[in-house]
Amino acid sequence: MESKYKNVLKNLSEKDIQEKICELVYKAGMFLNWSKKLLELYIIEYEKYKNSIKKLIKLYNKPIVKFIIIHNVLYFQEAVLDLNTLFERKGNPTEISFKFYFFNTKKSELEKNIDKVVKEYDKTGLREVRNKVLAHKQIDKAGDPISLFINPINKEHIEKAFLIIQKLKELIKENFKCYNYFENYYNSSFEFLYNYCEKKFK
Image (cartoon, rainbow, N blue to C red; front, side, top):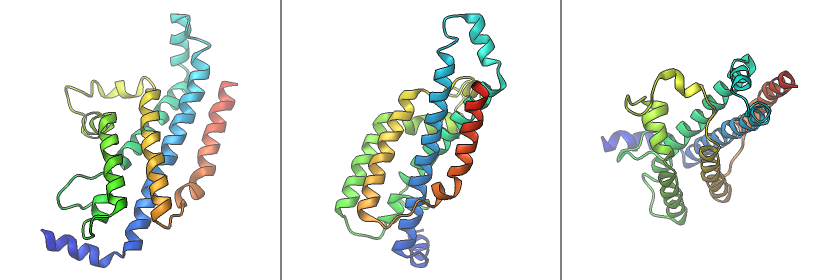
């Protein structure tokens, strides 16, 4: 098995792997950012209804509210899936991960710093959310499939993920030559969606 991964590494330069990692970090950051913005938009509207059960039922029945919650959850899910990929644990790494990057290199200060971030990530509980609810739908944890999209993602989960991504961005900026292709290409579409949702509330 080991020779298989060495052959893969031979076909990818160090720069190639760095670029893939950068793209994944920035993609996760952007999805998380828009998940957060949609949550904030939802909270503004929620505050107008929260003191009445009848009003809340009316709120949750609005198509735009359902739309915002679905996208808030899906964007968060994408960000957490990307983080889990970056923090791959396999002995023989096969994903776009830091472990894959360091597979044939000696211990470095960057690797030590990434290890610290991974430990912080594991403490957040986000890996378990990804494994048991978002990716694999563990039957005793995930609940009914529809339940994931009834409420927006807890703000605390988003903030925890934000801190992890921010630390990763700082480390890759210091050590890799990075470009944020994903944001440059897709940001206008996210802005279009957000503006549409905002107008619907107004």
